[in-house]
Length: 424
Image (cartoon, helix red, strand yellow):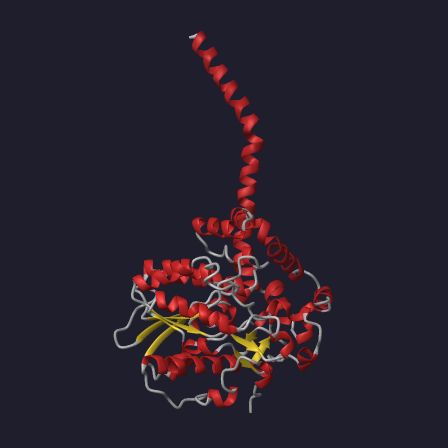
């Protein structure tokens, strides 16, 4: 009996010593995991709207039965980057087609073709294939500064590893595994906002004044920081719900209000400015490396997946702010891109170039909310132009709805900004 008691006491003492030895590790691990969970939970409602939109659209694609095909309509999914997210309005497109189409804008802000390959895989796993994909062809982007923070929004682990390999660095994986590394600014803003809510009105006013008067490189085009301040500090939960509500209501169309000019139209001072740095992040996509020289990542996989499911693809053009000939000279002529795309077309016959054959659409500044994205009026016009080309391609009868004279208003599609036409 005494021997058994001694053994029991020895085991108990060993267990206590073992716990004491590993307690710091266990507590540190628990604290780390709690910190990451808090970072994810807070960032989900406080990070900028563009990232919330990417995350929500990825969730849509993984929702079984969210997209129901209709026998009497052409079902259409639209892919592209932020220019497409802010430029294509499904309601306008379907109206122009007399209700013969059912479209959804699944363009991922800040992301290029490779993430759309994974988006399409998810979509086809949980939904029937659409009849058509309208695709803004833009394949680069792995090297841009914002890629590591946009691409991890609702991404899968395998997808994240692929991006890290493509970028040749580990930033993407670290952002995915350690969310606090990526989201600490949002967490800081969130708690700052909660403290401000408890402060007197005078302190709130002072904080807002300091924030709004900070130097802003993008202020040259007239950007208003008011919307961003309201959504980030004062009531992020309400703004988060409003973004998701409007995104669902508009079937994926997203007006990027947080970086829009105060008047909803960029300033003429921006057009006249010789300082290019203010609009650098909104500059038109640099011309793509020829496909024949180096196939961009996941181009082959994307088109093969679409071909496997008998999905037709229409390439829709990029639009650009018609500013100066000087800026246009920084980019490779679209003619080389067209040659590359025609090589793809010979491999994938379901691919239609349509407007892309004629180059980038150049649009007047009054259609832009910021130097790279359209305001609602510009989006209506751009969507109408895409609808007209889709009608020509598919044989759908042309209509006479509002903005039907889009080409007369915008001018014909051009490749030189010197010939641009201002709106009437």
